[in-house]
Amino acid sequence: MSVAQNPLSIKVTLPREDAALLTIEGDLDIDTATELQHHVANQLHHGRRHFLLDVSSVPFMDSSGMNIILRVYQEVRQISGGVYVISPTAAVRRILDLTGVSLTVQTVESVEEALILMDAQRDAGQLDSEQPGESAE
Image 1 (tube, rainbow, N blue to C red):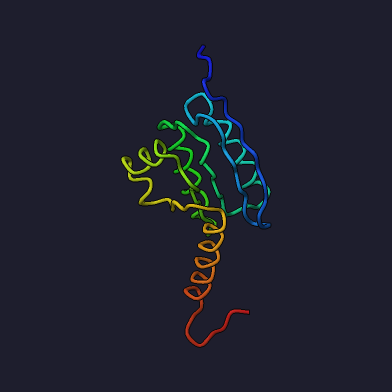
Image 2: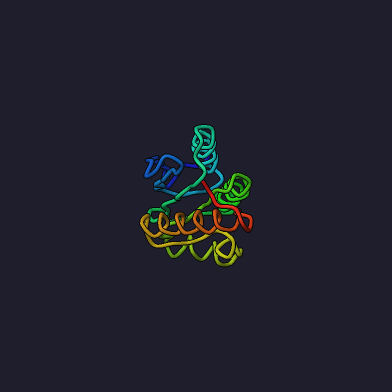
């Protein structure tokens, strides 16, 4: 059994009714990734479609953490949601870049930036879903 150097802490807040901000502190690895998965599943169960993952205090992430981010992304795409990785540390950004995850999942520098992108994507989605001659009500 390994002793965690940086035990995981996850704080969940709701900046909007359909969005959950998960502020993650500590290592996101094989020993701790399931905790993040449980928090996400709970928020999905409560109707959240957008996940803002603040990883600014995550000094280390392995493939387990990366896989959770990708799974969340795949799940919320099916319900027209989004995932935003906020302010990754250099080590986390490197993993996201090397694996190509940063090409799929949006990386932003702040919660405010994520919320702006969320609004822009929602508005673009509403426009794209309208048929010619129809208006959204």
